[in-house]
Length: 499
Image (cartoon, rainbow, N blue to C red):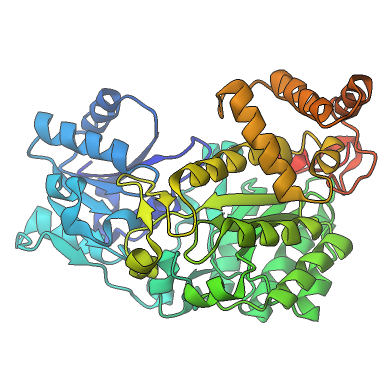
């Protein structure tokens, strides 16, 4: 073995699609290449020891916002104990503003952008000459039908224990300035028949959970319908062995043909990630986000009322021009549409994104280290931004967990943002904690909060007890569900299905 491909995943259940693409496209070097994944939080010395156990001549690291800090330590140690090992970096985190990064200084070579063609070529030059003179190599983007698909490289263990990431296309035609896809010229589809043949093979091997990483799954409706029909056929043929699919949707593009297809899916089989990000038209214009808010709201409402799809809808706090009041207005508008989860994100400055052009005018101040979360801006000071960060954390624990289905509407009343912000401030003042809050303690704190708002203790405890018993009398948040709670969906979604 000569070449080792590796990365530090955020969790064990995440399997690196990018590394498998590289391995699939190594050509003549394929037999000399191996893949080994690690998880953030592992000891640096153990990672280096396990890398060197393969005695590689070249190590290729996938660098992302979530692993760059730890991988920098790994590369630093690797170059100290084995300086002759050639380190090649790739991935979105090192594809932009490369010269100022410590990990780039430590490495021998960096590939920016697409690596499917450029990484094998670079490895061949390192091994056989002529030795590459340049440190930074711009990735060559090949025609999509020339990229070898990687899905056979998911092992049986991957299929059994990990999320299977797939993509029917790469890129995005939209130019939202907070997203790296703003740099793409368009979206490029893979040949559909080839892709579906790979999905058939994965299914035959036992894969039942497919997570699409396409930025715009519903951009081409004909393609979307064919892919959804693939899963519908599996569900119809084997209703006792359900399959689960996760897609990212453009919120204001849901024509009738797509609605008809979506309506055929049973509960627990389909999840949509829908990026609203902001309902503020002025903010949308400022960050080059094109979105018909009326259509987007109507589509989310339709999905809630006429489909069994689980909806995970995103908002971003901290965008330039977005005040706390305008964000609260958008949050309440989204809450009223009744999605299963509102993912309350805090703006991050991804390297290379055009959002940085607003830094001076809007006073954008970001953390100097990954994940580069915004600390303050012209309209939201540091202390207030920290309150929003805590709101997001507690919202995940209380609302998105699905464990407080009966209690949540009572807690939020007629002002979801304002009421939960008040609860968040009180909870932090009472516990001085945002992590490692045991469920029993959290439930007790929710009961105490309701009592401070005038609810009788017996009534508050009974309300919390109804959630602990797994019931949701209203059914508004925990909709759908299979008999006995059996579902192919991940546990987080399963908590939102009626018992």
